[in-house]
Structure formats: structure tokens, C-alpha cells
Image (cartoon, rainbow, N blue to C red; front, side, top):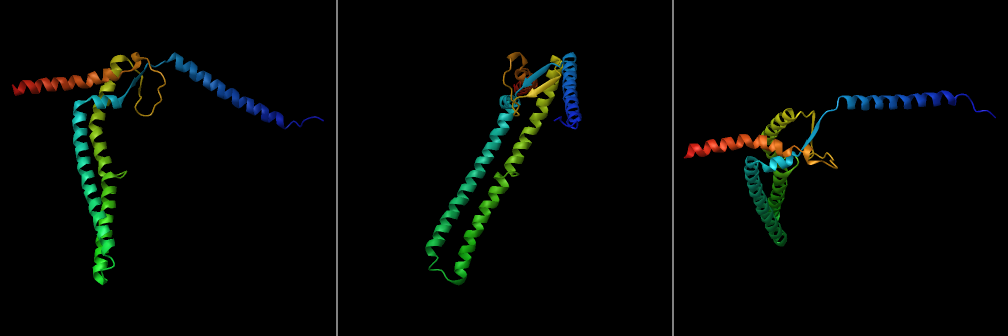
Amino acid sequence: MEKPLLDEPNIIITNMKHFKIIFTFALLLLFGFSNAQKIGVVDTNEILNKLPQYKEAEARLNSQIDTWESELQSLQSEYERKKAAFESEKVLLIGDQLKLREKEVVDLDKNIKTTTSLRFGANGEITKLRTNLVLPFQDQIWGAIKTMSEKNGLGIVLDKSNNISVIFLQSKYDYTEKVLSVLLKGTDKKEKTNSKGKK
């Protein structure tokens, strides 16, 4: 028994689709090789961590975070102390005294949760401060990357610190130190000027 002819158009359409995909891929490869761009890689986290101004600003932020954490710990201790006292004296308290002490413990618990959320939450003060801390340095880094890429004729610069999987990288394509030297060149000039002005 012969197969119906209905399958033949589907096979032809499928083969045409495969041909189009392969043809498009081949054109992209051909175009890519004829217009090859020089690619460089930098690590912005490493650059940030080597900038002295960033380290100073981060130390101030960490100091503020430590202060907030100690305040939160003292609130937590106070809550636990008041809750334990309330639980042990609960049988002796009556009427308004019971409600007042219970409200005191509940309000302290709410205060702890609110403080934790406002300061340490996903959209809390720490997240905002950290973002504001990094922004000016990011602008400087992007400017230095632009300068370095123009100087070295790079068409594409990847940041390996932003979850880009770089499996292998020859050191000649890692421009982290060159970007850092562009950034620190301006810093060294400022420090020399400041030290001369103080003498």
C-alpha cells in the first residue's frame, strides 16, 4: 500500500526551514569573520576592590551597618527580656495591666520586624546605600573602560564579574589592570597635588 502524498509537502517545508536556518547561520558566520571585532574582558569587581576611595566608602558603610546590627541586637535582647518577664508574671496580672504588658511586648516585636525590613530588607536602607556607594565609581569605571577600549581598538568589552562564564582567558585579553591604571592615574595626580599643598 502506498503512503499518502500529504506527508511530502510537510517534509519539503521542514527541509526548507532547516535550509533557511543553516543558510542564515552560515551568513552570520561569514559576516562575523569578515567584520571581526577585537574583544576584551575586564573584572569590575576587582577594579572596585582596588580603588582606595571605594574601600574607604565601603568601610564607612560597613561601620554604619555594624551600628544598625548592634541596635537591632539590643532591641532583640530587650524584647526577649520583656517577653520572658511577661510570661512569668502573666498569672499575677489582671485586666488592664495584662493588656498593657502584652501590648508592650507585641509593639516591641513589631518594631523589630519593621526596623529589620526598613534597614536590612531587599529594598532597605543598606541596599540603597550600597547602590549609591557604587554608582559614582561605576561611572568612573565605565569612562576608563571606554578610554582603554578606544586606545586598544576593542569593539566589545565583557565584564567577567557579572555572571558571564569565561571558561578560558589568555591574560593578553584581560584588560582589568589597564582600566585600573587609567583610573588610578587620575587618583595619583590628585594625591600628589594634595601632598604638595600640605607641605
